[in-house]
Length: 424
Ligand SMILES: *[C@@H]1O[C@H](CO)[C@@H](O)[C@H](O)[C@H]1NC(C)=O
Ligand SMILES: *[C@@H]1O[C@H](CO)[C@@H](O)[C@H](O)[C@H]1NC(C)=O
Ligand SMILES: *[C@@H]1O[C@H](CO)[C@@H](O)[C@H](O)[C@H]1NC(C)=O
Ligand SMILES: *[C@@H]1O[C@H](CO)[C@@H](O)[C@H](O)[C@H]1NC(C)=O
Ligand SMILES: *[C@@H]1O[C@H](CO)[C@@H](O)[C@H](O)[C@H]1NC(C)=O
Ligand SMILES: *[C@@H]1O[C@H](CO)[C@@H](O)[C@H](O)[C@H]1NC(C)=O
Ligand SMILES: *[C@@H]1O[C@H](CO)[C@@H](O)[C@H](O)[C@H]1NC(C)=O
Ligand SMILES: *[C@@H]1O[C@H](CO)[C@@H](O)[C@H](O)[C@H]1NC(C)=O
Ligand SMILES: *[C@@H]1O[C@H](CO)[C@@H](O)[C@H](O)[C@H]1NC(C)=O
Ligand SMILES: *[C@@H]1O[C@H](CO)[C@@H](O)[C@H](O)[C@H]1NC(C)=O
Image 1 (cartoon, rainbow, N blue to C red):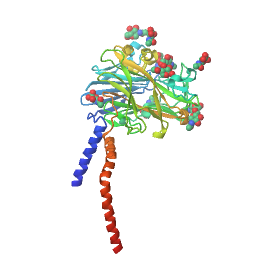
Image 2: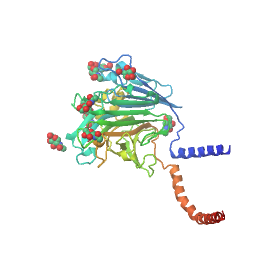
Image 3: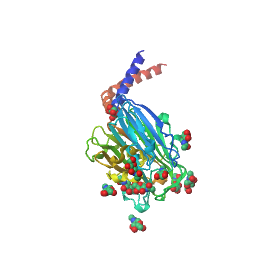
């Protein structure tokens, strides 16, 4: 009985310790449900539609996530009151007339906040001088793959686990882009994967870098698995665009922030956390640690660096015709090209570090990031670390104070013992 009480008291202490340490013991939990969206009739030249809808119901509001490879690989997130429905006018969505496509995705009541990202292109570059810097790459030895409908995306229903709210967008077929003539080739068993997992509560991702989730976040894994590189010294980069509701009607003010912590408890060897967010409340954000992994066995020894580059605010890139037939345009319409209604920023990241032997060393690279709504998670020094440090500092002091006494007592006991042994 006594032990049981002590145990539960121990549990409470452990809970408090972890709760305080893991910045968000966000009591908010969302009920998450994911389904595949399929219109009854698809246009003739569309064999299947990779489009998913995830609803995350909370006590006060609902987060709606739409993810699709249609037009351009994109994720759209809207925060609405509870009970609000998402409607898609399929005829307009598939129309050839862009005016029809705009606003073909609507909500029964206007959302409070909307944001989204588009994966614009995967970039391969030759790095003969081992600089691991995309900005210094020679454009003549750079290959760009638009992540548009041209890519032969596989049927995501075959790879996704909707019961776990995990969606997998995968391409594993060699192909040539019709306009640029760019070819992407995979080594046997290779693929380019984007895994999207919507979380409904605060927790840590199970695999490294163990990013912190809240009830309002989605984790995205980008996996470059056995892509046949054009160069022995090849490295990859990714260009992403981010767009968000402009609540204060002021242009600009999307920032990239780098924070440093002395605590690498969750991601050994990594002391930085980077986010792209807007200086307003509420905000949305993209967050990652500058680390990616060169093997499916994610560990410190397979880790390499993710380098980030300055944000760019060129609306034209995301507003070109190529990008228009996607879910973000279907919701925002031309307004996504106007910086008074929405804020947008583009950014690159590249994978690898000087002397890590390039992509071809393992032909594998995996990067994880989260996108979310609400407070930007921050890594605090956890209480458990503080306790460990305190114990670490405290024990020697205790030893100094009581060590002498202990040694005396011990010696006395040993003397007694040896006397007894002698008698026997
Ligand atoms: C389908 O065909 C129409 C013309 O009939 C074209 O405008 C559209 O881009 C095509 N869509 C795809 C996904 O190929
Ligand atoms: C996609 O995969 C799902 C699940 O296996 C299947 O039901 C569906 O028919 C597939 N769609 C196409 C167009 O192959
Ligand atoms: C596109 O649709 C709009 C509104 O439905 C219409 O006014 C316009 O003429 C159409 N454009 C084309 C090229 O058909
Ligand atoms: C790229 O190729 C063009 C044409 O062959 C050449 O003029 C240019 O100098 C090259 N650029 C670099 C950075 O090598
Ligand atoms: C893609 O091309 C590579 C190299 O030519 C070949 O080894 C591989 O089998 C091809 N993959 C598929 C799925 O056809
Ligand atoms: C790829 O995207 C760029 C802009 O991001 C665009 O200029 C180009 O035409 C696209 N290429 C293809 C083949 O769609
Ligand atoms: C965007 O495109 C328009 C027209 O094509 C052009 O006038 C404008 O200067 C471009 N903006 C940027 C930032 O390049
Ligand atoms: C990303 O890198 C590519 C290749 O160097 C470059 O063309 C593009 O402008 C960069 N994008 C941004 C947002 O900096
Ligand atoms: C990676 O792929 C390249 C071809 O692009 C090949 O030469 C190399 O041996 C592969 N590396 C490994 C570890 O399989
Ligand atoms: C998640 O969203 C809810 C509802 O909008 C908000 O109250 C809460 O603070 C958010 N959580 C975090 C950690 O930002």
